[in-house]
Image 1 (cartoon, protein in one colour):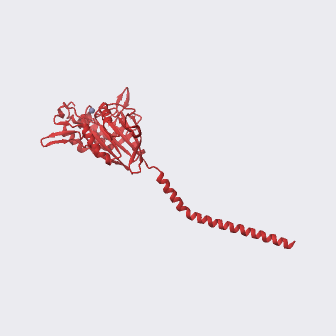
Image 2: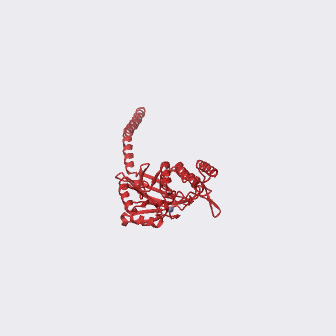
Image 3: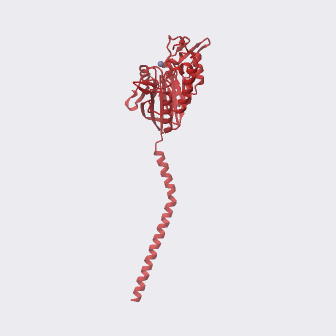
Length: 355
Ligand SMILES: [Zn+2]
């Protein structure tokens, strides 16, 4: 009996030893496995990154035909518009999309405006636009009414691109474009080309020394230069909606047309479809009414292509009403008040000039 117990005891001990050995071996195997795992994880991460599509988001904010309406005004008894409110809204959108917002004006900043606009002949308007951080504007016909000399002064003050490469000043030594033809803005990794078609009233006294070039020919030429070095081409057009529809159908390579002059509120964009269904391209035409009553907002999504370029994958366009519900930018409001105070003190120098 004793011998038997000793034998089973030994077997028990042996079994325990075997178990311990198996456990130790498994630990070692586990260690070996965990030594290999960082490499495996790295490889997996790299594969995942390669599969992950890089995406970018861009917001373009736009207004047109503000015509010197710097303070809010009444429409059907409601307070609407106001550059300080527009600035507040822009600020809000910029804070939610840091470094990914462009702000543009599609023309007619001056004329038909309030006392501040007339007193300073557009200087206050450009100053407030500088403070708001505008990126570009195209000259509207109203910009020419106070004469080219005044306009040149305002253009020199602007800290943003002033586009009007299709309007030429006739000089003895030849003709010279009034403004820039286009500008390329870098927004994060995206390169955005902005080109502009301005407009003059040929019979207006201020237009005597001015001439309009061949808009289509010029726009095609600019597109040829812009397309190879940009991911998106935007046309700022002060031509009015019917002309914009024609331009959208004719010009190949323009993605967005931000219009003005016809004072149209486009709550939905006009979309022009081009090309065969398999390679369909769309041109989006937008416009945001008048007098800072709306801020146009375009949201654009891009994805990175294998060749390193950025492909436009989604476009959403809308207009946001500017009314008393929008908190004004206090700094812009204060600056405007300062201009309003000063313009009351001094007799208007622009009296007698009726733009
Ligand atoms: Zn106009």
